[in-house]
Amino acid sequence: MSITVQLAHFSDCHSHFDGAPMRFLPVGESEWRTQCGGYGRILTRLDRLRAQAEAAGQACLFLHGGDTFQGSLYFNRFKGRANADLLGRLRPDAMVIGNHEFDLGNGPLVEFLRQLDFPVLTANLDSSQEPDGLSLRLRGLPNLYDASRPWHQRLVGGVPFALLGITLPQMATIANPDAHTHFHGIEETLTRALEEIRAQGIHHIILLSHLGLEQDKRLAARFPELSLIIGGHTHSLLGDLAPLGLVSEGDYPLMIEGVAILHAAHSALCLGVCELTFDDAGRVSRSRGQLEWLPWQPWPFASEAPAGLCFCEPAAEIEQHLAKRYRPELETMTQRVVTRLDAPLHHQRLPDASYPAGSQVAPLVASAMLSAAREQVGQVDFSLHNAGGVRCSLEAGPLSEADIAGRLLPFAIPLTLYRVHGHELAEALESAIDNATNNGGVGNGNGNGSFPYTAGVRFCYQGDRPKGSRITRLEWEPSPGQWQAVDASTVYRGVSSAYTASGKEGYTALARTLTQHNQELGITLADAFSRWARHRPVLAPLPELVEYHGG
Image: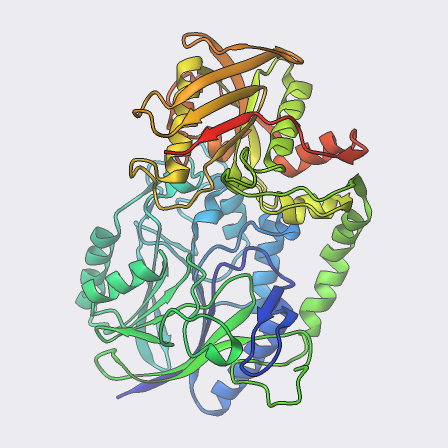
């Protein structure tokens, strides 16, 4: 007997409860910019889908592809509390844990999971080594389906479905899980879980994957017994999006070896909506659906609006709750002006001919980090920050707390103090630049966000020299304006984000030595920058500390 299911899904919302700006280039029309999506409009659309499915005698599932943490002023101020609260109002049937859920370590994730009342699926997450005395433990959470209990059975229209999740196994490299939390390989995890599922006689299998579209394609080819993959991580767009002037990465659903793959952008901009019919063997035999974008404004042209635009009002339940509980503090932050700029400051990750020292903004952030660390602990020699941790350029005019925490530095990651030998600092700088520029084929595929910006140290990188000797000058500033060479065997005290200090994206040398001296300072990048900038009536570029010569 076949079964038809009304499915809705999204992923990578990154706390964008109000959606985000969207740019369409409709065929035959001029560019259209509008705010799009948000949890209020998503709930309105979900309510309609659920009502339609009930009237048609169909089941309705709403699934989440991971990465609800980080990315907005809401998260910066309220952390996982707002995510759990507002996500709960959308009533997902299941979600997978994304990499950003681990950005602040296990504790905030556990607090978030404790507030949820739906299954969270991450079959390759192994929390069995957690110490018994922990107050915030992943192990044993009733709604968490991890390596100890890798899948969840759900009756859908009377048919047993198996739901399981898989997340990035290299979590320790790109996020910040506690050291005792481990992640098993993808294929070994799925092989074991699918054997268990088949042994139970279940043929309808839905995988929630936070691995990205290319990896999902490989999994569909490797495990054709899967019925459906709901994906996330790469912010991928699928379907016929040409009428809206958007670039698609494939059909919706994308069929690989009989397995249907669905992705739905990011930032709560849209909802993936697909009616799927499964045959007795769990194969998708028929599908009908698309990504539905949720614009705030009406269609501004005389022509008929293209398919894929869903115009609706936000659910009053969500809007009233946001207005009462969360937006007042955000509006207060918008009104609190920290400093101003007489001229724009440009941010780009890598140096080039136009900006030979790279970003004008990232050195300001590094200076703020160094100032905040010195205020707390006294002598700190330098700060080091990765370019990807700075998210935008700055326009001329006032700069508010909301601009800083919501746009410039939206990742709420704490500062960490550490000690490092001079030769390890040089190694970290070289390795991070090699990683960012893929010099010698050593990039890790995470883009160019690892390029370093500093305060208290300055350096020269020459990419055409042999590996291990590309930092040709490295100096530190023991007193203002006085520079001297960094000694290879001397121990220096530095401050970085917890992400960089733990050795991510080429900064391995920072985490390899003297780690017993690491100290989390309890202040985020945004808070440090706001404190520092308040003492500067006008922000302007700092003296250049980066001399870069590519390979």
